[in-house]
Image (cartoon, rainbow, N blue to C red; front, side):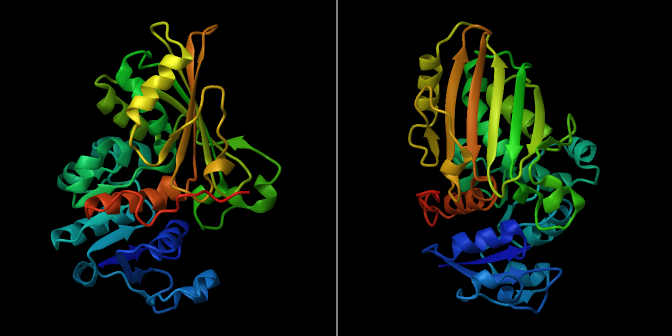
Length: 346
């Protein structure tokens, strides 16, 4: 058994980690940390976990956290991990960061898109980007894993095979993404107020969302040339789920069957990517509560574009589930250990 600590245990990603790790055969949830509810029992804040044996919420202290845990999950807002992680890492802790503080390799790009100071460069250089399907070997030997963002997870799993193929103009990508409200976290604001979002859908952070450079960075690394992405996120009135509809301009004539075979080869043996049959259109409901990403591909011969559909549960594959998947790789266990194998339905 390994000892796990969770920072930000009262947030959506933190409590989703608890849900998944409570059933993990090799894990003890040893310590929970919160800056807002120190000294309280978690079930006094979140009654739905009252049957689970959990420690009280503790104050955030890097020295104690490093000594008391084999791995620490940081389910924190941007900026917190940039300050806390180096203190943990210098003391030998292993860290899986669910914020965006270590996803971008360039501190200057982080400063531009996140509008705050980046983490120290030495730790940015050591961070491994935790897209498990494509970076498993690097994750296995990492001390610091940067868990991908929810939108980038859906977009990158959808696009990396084509980025590597050379079949698509690398500056032509358009990623239209729609997310449930839980992606905004538990914080109270007018933007997630029920009467403001119900019966409505809207785009936000058009041409300025901080996940844009993350998608471009990883597509460029995997594709070997610079990739440029037009990314537009939308908020829809549902709790969980992300649907990505991505478009790319083909530079050679290919069929839907050829693209489908490309993806079949790319994801063979990857337990959490499910490739749908040509003509099938995945729905967010079909991955709800699971760590799966369902993908389908389509070639529009009339326009010369390829269309890729990708769905995930933003709280699981887009956050806590992928973090557990990365932990499994770090400790040498099968990727699917402790993760639900059947989505919730209906």
